[in-house]
Image (cartoon, rainbow, N blue to C red; front, side, top):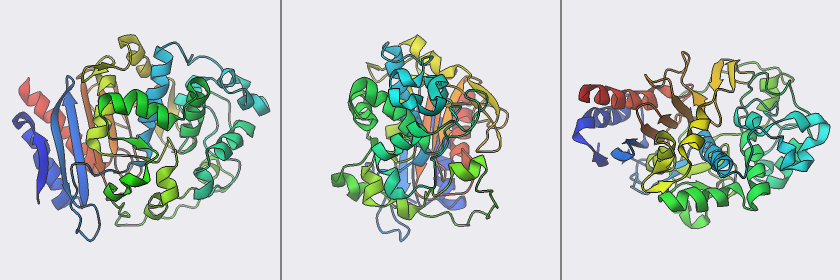
Length: 379
């Protein structure tokens, strides 16, 4: 197995686990990166971009990371709040007047950020083509009534969160969230992450590889909250590999990048708002993300989750870090984003071989554990 990149000798355990993921956990192509105190200590990649193992994974290979896109959308909203352009406690309708339809004047921006807005799905089953139509999706969400009492409970907004946050960003800035992220985050931090990929970059996108085992079929009532939230949603490698999906802006699910680019974009969140010589947020603005919003059974996922603003918090059910002030999320199939504000660690795992585990999954968690074991050995 040819592994490329850099790994500080103090974190050699991470490199060992990265190799183990290929040998023991079926990785095809992958990347892992981590910063400590704002400095890269690991930036590794290896394997292949395709199931036939003919195209090696390169330094600039990118891949669809599904819901690991959500922290990118969230950092945009947090930055606007920190700059005084967005009030997280304000009604969404203050920025998006049409959103007040059907009694939604009580939905606050913070509810969008914590999956507690009561809009985890569309009014009907939706096609991939419709998901790629920004105006259609936003109009559908604006017209709906909420599905439960706003703010009382979370219900994972699998794909809708990106449109909800993104439309607020668009109304404030006049830019789509993909454009805003590019100019205010990606370009400033040299983060090769895209919410909407230009066709010229298609050639370096790795093929997603379906999970080796089918997820057991669960009978789901089509009228239930999970059934309605997931109605028509196609997250298959085939759908995500279409030109329409790649070029669209789906800020909860179609970001393309690699571990390095995610870590470049998110390291500021672990370091009081600054990274690589750029201040994205003030220390107070960065700390805002840690404020607990909801805790308890998630109405879509069916498990307890602690949500802060734009991220989940470490919990007994998600022991992603030994430190309490850790933000995280991840994407369908196994990609991860971790922001530990106590240890000032930021890490990400990105791959093309999908799995069926809940976030973060054994591959990403093994790598994260190796980072913390290495840190413990240094203390």
